[in-house]
Length: 87
Image (tube, rainbow, N blue to C red; front, side, top):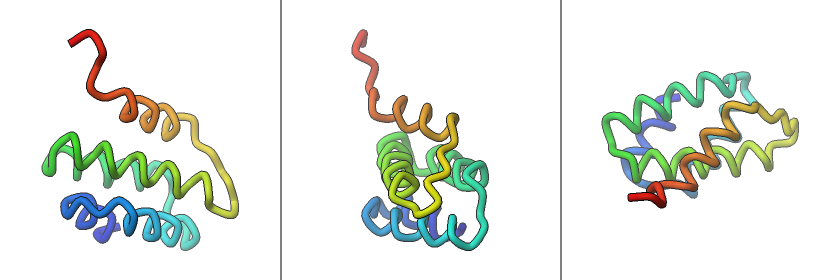
């Protein structure tokens, strides 16, 4: 899970997807991944966090189990809509 935060800070969304798949396959829950990415977003900035959430969402969709978590999908969609159109 530390790798997820480090890759978010480095701005490496392609590599992050690989580690998200690995984390899901080893039993890390979607909620735990969200928590790591949320904390990394606070320290690394919104652009890095947005890329990380999008990469994690895409990796989760490609994961063999395809367990989709509603909150994760909602956060990823919110990240795609950033910045808000009314500003």
